[in-house]
Length: 638
Ligand SMILES: Nc1ncnc2c1ncn2[C@@H]1O[C@H](COP(=O)(O)OP(=O)(O)OP(=O)(O)O)[C@@H](O)[C@H]1O
Image: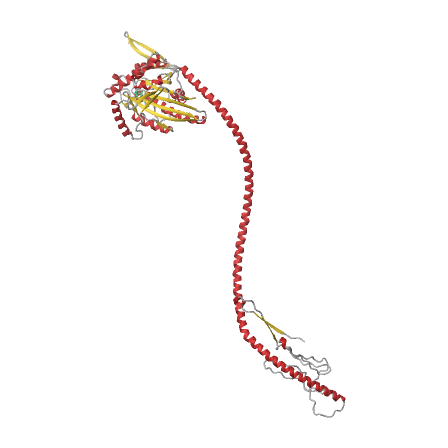
């Protein structure tokens, strides 16, 4: 015997209310599917029914066991001792819709009472009674079934009312499910995006890791290199220390050698005589060549030490040739260029750097080439004169001396001695040419009245000559010096004479002060280099100077006369040397008086017309060369 049950599980909308999930379980009998059969007992027509278990709210449908044998056909007459079954096989019909259960169980009619024939009849009767009892039982069961049916109907009603709600809930659940599915879909999509991003990030991470590894390797390599280099640095440091020690030793010996060199150099110059005299014969100018002006007979010896001047002289109506020979430290012929002259003067420039006072002056008649020799053409490398060349060399040499610890300051003064007054050529240097020229002229005028605008003072202790009130410019570059020279040259007093189209009417005095300090060796030096372009001695009748020019010429000649006088006195070792006779000799006091190295350049003209002046200049040069002015001394700490 079996029964079927349907289980409904109702889920309240917990996702909406968030209330605790509540499960309602009901068991409802499935009447529709219940098959009811009437079964006969194999021996008697027993009918068994199953009762109802009201406690469990479960309906048990009555079932009948089919008799395995001897099924009674309809209308078949039961033998005497049998019951006649008037109906077909009986089965229980369940009709829910009609709710009409018919009792199809065979009703056994005992018929009209007749006398009992035998004991079989008694049995049949007993059977009938039993059947009646069973029928009653069946009726009772039928009643129960009806009741159960009613209950089922009630259940159905409950289900019917519950169903729409459940359906709505199901729909809601479906919608929610769909929403959730959508959400899940979106979440999945997002997850996919994240997964993609993650993939990219992972790839990037891998790349970074690879790079990191590479860096790590590089760092290790660099560390190794660094260690290697550190080792090398340590090695180099010890090498450097030993080299520094060696350099110091070399420097010490170099210092000793440098001092020796200076001493030897000075001894050499001393052997040559303190006043070195060189002669330069200028070449003919283009104009003179064109005019075919007669030339003097000047002959230089091969060793460039002597010069012969031949002159024709009419004596006793006979033309006699007189030859005078002059000896100098060096003679430069007409073809000598500026560089050759400078190479002879260069050792003196070195002496100025070494702390000596050096004086180089160009002497000669007007137009003999003094200004060309001393200044030349500043802007031309070939034609530039002694002053710009000396500047170049000084700057080159002091730069080299920096390696030996020397630091030099270069200061410049440039004055002219015009009509016995000192004029500063570098004053108002920042003004325009026109303004400077004007103020310069004004100053020259006022100087006539007051000569002490610029004046010469002496430092008796150091034997230095100082020009007071003259500008002292500090120069750090060659270029600055060139500009100064150009501006000074513009102010220089010049005019045209018969002897020279651009004749200097003053003595130009260019002074370089060289002050050196050596920090390594605790040494110092104070030297000076004076480069003087003297005004030319002039034959006033010949030069045709009149008025102002004549005054200038007279002053020039007078000052040159005093210069010759002073040198003569020094040569003659006079007790008293009159330096104060002229501004020029006052200025040259310590240069000619024994503390300086002096060099005189005697410039001569090649023209026959100037031969007498040439001879006078050469004679003076000769005298100067024989003048021993004493041993020069250095200034500073050595
Ligand atoms: N070595 C030379 N080579 C070429 N030209 C020269 C040389 N020396 C002088 N001159 C030329 O000779 C002329 C006169 O020279 P410079 O003016 O230098 O004479 P100076 O002695 O200074 O005259 P002054 O005393 O009148 O000033 C100038 O035209 C100059 O260019």
